[in-house]
Length: 136
Image 1 (tube, one colour):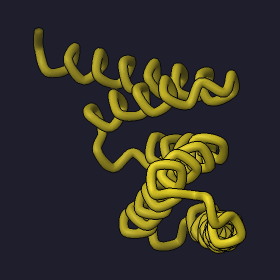
Image 2: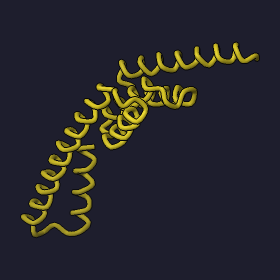
Image 3: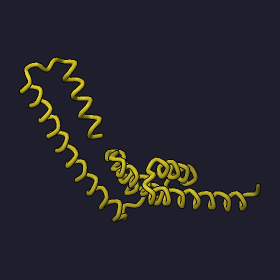
Image 4: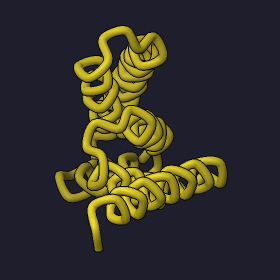
């Protein structure tokens, strides 16, 4: 395949992966969205559109730290990207809210354990696991 044909094919594949990632995102299929974004990023590692969609899917999956890192990478590539800068603020707020929910959850858990003098270690571990599975 000559270089012109290869470039045309690569451009077409990139567009296809970006379109598939958008479709997956709209359908709430976050893992598929990430998969297609990763394929697009194999073609074009600094593709801001693929990075932005991947970060959005990470937010939707509550993988906030990963999302923040991706938005920060976008700003490294494009320091003037206002959407990514705004999303970092949103993600930081979501992280603060999650930390507060976690604090409250564990405060309630330990309060429940201390109120129940019959709770033994295996039951405390089971209770912790149950609470973790309920909220994640």
